[in-house]
Image (tube, rainbow, N blue to C red):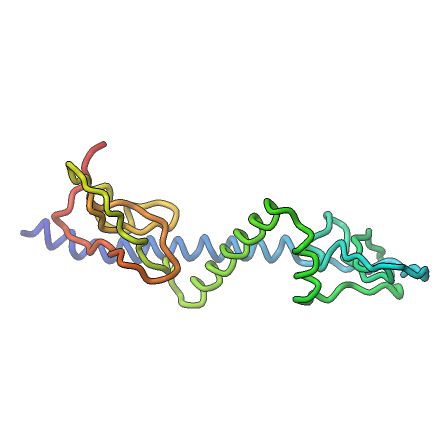
Length: 199
């Protein structure tokens, strides 16, 4: 009985510590991203005066250019150009949704998929920070597989890696990446008597 009570009292403390370190990892990751993409003191080069038949946007923000280049506005559209250390009449592109859509449509299917995946991850991280929790989401839908033997692979979220949830399945408790929308999946409620089956 004493061992069971000790496990009950220790588990919330361990989970809080686990969530705290996950939050710190996310904060440090976001700080690294902010420092990496922060623009240095530089300017777009002098603008060309020629006229164009058709404007083509090669970029819509500095993120689309190589390191050391700015996305600058030209008469022929937005282009990536190497920066200068002194002010000119050149203008940096102010990010707009219209420019983004126009540029996004020129990407290949593989590039679009990669960009969409990164945007989903960033939005998920921002949502996690906003609600103050390192783990946000729901267990995915339960599979309808009929199992011969039930196997317990986790007893709580602390037993899972990479932000996964410990979810109840027909075949036992397993780790799953969270879904962003509610499903019929159920998270495992911590039980001190739970034991992970050896593989």
